[in-house]
Image (cartoon, rainbow, N blue to C red; front, side, top):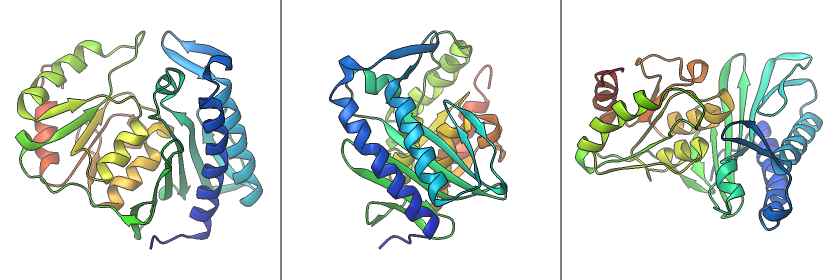
Length: 266
């Protein structure tokens, strides 16, 4: 059975409650109000309602904790040692197109260290959880990253820069050697689930540039607790701060890092 700390219990309860609302909204997509933050950056009433539920539930259970939330930004609390990092709907574009691949992502930092994580896809009721030093789980099943040692057998996930953002040429230059060296590359549209799926061994690795902390915080802990390696794309430990990330098992990681760093602009 997964280890369920009091904080993680609070987080899973909040995610499940907010998830019920997302299931209802997913069935009424055509009635949702949708706006654009950027050329291809959607925000819907579902994002906003889910964020509100999560902040309310977590604040009620842990009064004084701070928040870093996608839509609202920073919410300063009295307790400066604890911070929830939340993406209420990672995969909004999938959601709005009726694709059931999206998730609620919640991480808890204690004194700057990630200690608890939840990634929840309510449509298929997959709840990924992790607690620092206690492992990662999918529902009640312990997770381990895949053990493949050969790149040519490996399935790699990535994210493509949105329209209106820079980095398209660099992405193409990084993609080419990865495609030539692996069994395949997938782009599913939710970084939180990509990371959770690496933790579950479904993907062998994941890389992307330009992500926000709420995209990756929970997934970073899931991968680490499943035995994976997490780095930025310079090979350092600033993936959360930089938004550039590579995760894989300890055998594949250095090979993928070399491919990415030796691409024309890597």
